[in-house]
Length: 401
Image (cartoon, rainbow, N blue to C red):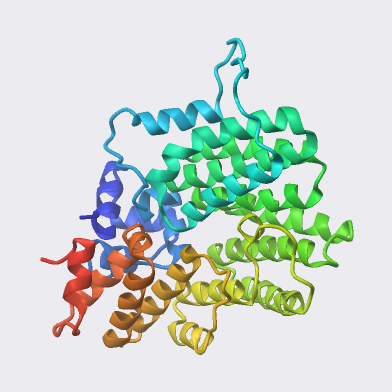
């Protein structure tokens, strides 16, 4: 069972030799909130609050979020699969190059299909399987890039970007940033300005998860403004990338507790998504494109409303949503979790359980990877009268007493 957020905060506070009052002074979070969290009268907190607490404790945000990694984290040496990924991202230094004789060079189109399939595994939370496949994918991509010029470099950029995303999910942020630096380098060689901007969204996410919110905001805004400056947002491909970057910047504003600025940017993104829906569809495999549509914008707006303790607004935004068919399962997961959280905050336990039941049906693997699901179930479990249907979900997550 995952460590309760309150226990984690109390343990880290004591390790830092801080009283609750001292921690409040360092973080800017009220003593009352800290006390309620440590006494387990609150199982979760807004992301701006978590960022402030992490900063006050001198730890990364992921330390508090405690997102379960895709492979067990025991404090021991990295498992062989992760060592293989590290070696694929960081090839041997001062060693002779591997002999490619006998290796098949994939065409760019076949390599893109292989990488797209791997992204599907990522969005389905099949992290152990992806961990096994990724070294081979990176090897294929490097070989193709060496033989196929700019097209091969573009595919290599997407492969390294995937390695960065998986590393973030595994809690290996330094490895993630190394992979993403290589992704941007390959994208620059490819000569595709949209690919460079698209990949910039990934280090912005990594910076968000390590409390570098100003850096996250800056890189997303800079990339989006470059697209505008260069006149690259007049077609569907450019507008998708611009929209993804704008949503990323808005998320950073929200986590800096600047909700109004974030909301303004999200409304602008929603208008752009409306224009995108009327444009001819983007060519290429959708799994390799920026995630940007009316559905993704609305999902992100729901999330920001929940995180800023506006549950009624979140449910109003979610009402009647029809998700586009290309919405990844990971995004569907976030929406259902946020709806469950909003119902819980409003005291509608039955509505929360209904959302959690839907989540278990459509994305059981992702559900196990979200500590927010555990926090919601813990809150519902402590109610004087537990709602019908809660126990199977609690047992599934391993939180039932």
